[in-house]
Image 1: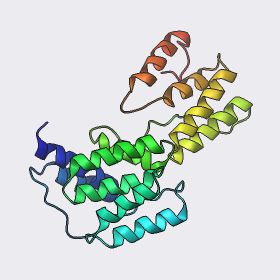
Image 2: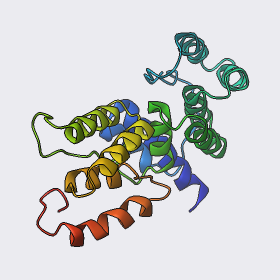
Image 3: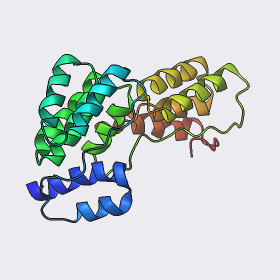
Image 4: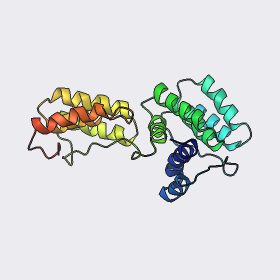
Length: 219
């Protein structure tokens, strides 16, 4: 992929999350994306991040463009396990015209704290052609009544909170508890989805069609 097009796609991923589809499409069709000197990059909410880190990141972004990237790099050294810091560093790097460095920051965000909204957003930014977020599991029940259904409902809650690792763990527990329950098995497969390795989920979903040929959830 040509560098300028790659820059456009990366910026589009961030813009889509920040300002909606119209802005994202506009940026994605540009052949050249200049450095952003206007409004500062926004702070994306991440309830998993401690408030002191959120405050420091907010202060760094408000200083844009004076020293924002430098301050965020310092914060990554001070808080190496924070996906929020690394994701926001990636956004600031894109705005500064450094898309390859941004991609490295986003990959690190996924690596250091995968069970966080910032890691999910980093994955979205790295895969701008894919639908945003993780594919949700949709339950067939309105209200959980059994232990398995309560686990599935808990996993759905984790998905809504952008906590994919927690969702995967709970869905796996439900599947282990009820190997003959098609909903639990589908949830466990969906919970494995990763944009870097989508085959993890699809390799589990395929056999379920044969195992549960009449289950609506599998279809």
